[in-house]
Length: 158
Image (tube, rainbow, N blue to C red; front, side, top):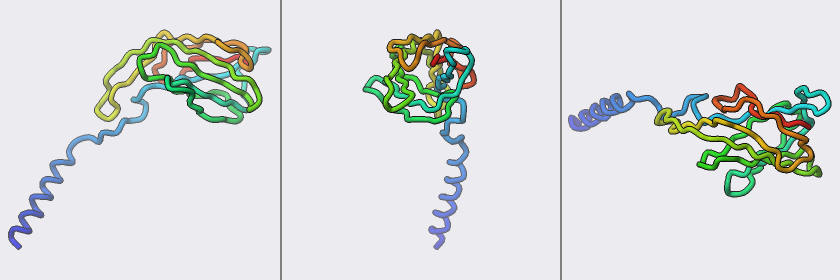
């Protein structure tokens, strides 16, 4: 019984000292930022709301469908985190419409954040090119670096 109490006390003391470090959880806002895309009307030039929008992204191993959204005025889109200098993004406004292809080019800079977050990539010199038009008529570049999701980096003109 004496040894049993000793083992329990030793276990409790060990647990007390092992719980003294921070959790390896990435706090919000410390990860790799996401590109914000907004939409403009071709006739007025002002920001507009789309009835529906489908987004797909080529992350290097084929297109990944990010799904449909309805009554949308902006969309957050994750870019590639490998060493590729561009990401191809595909947009559709209906299931029967054609698909527009936009190539977003950039340079990346990696910064170590913490054990929980690992490395954060920031995107600089961001520019966009419309490869395939219809339904997107043109693209207008916004903020040319992606540090957080507050600023719009790309405007699609419909």
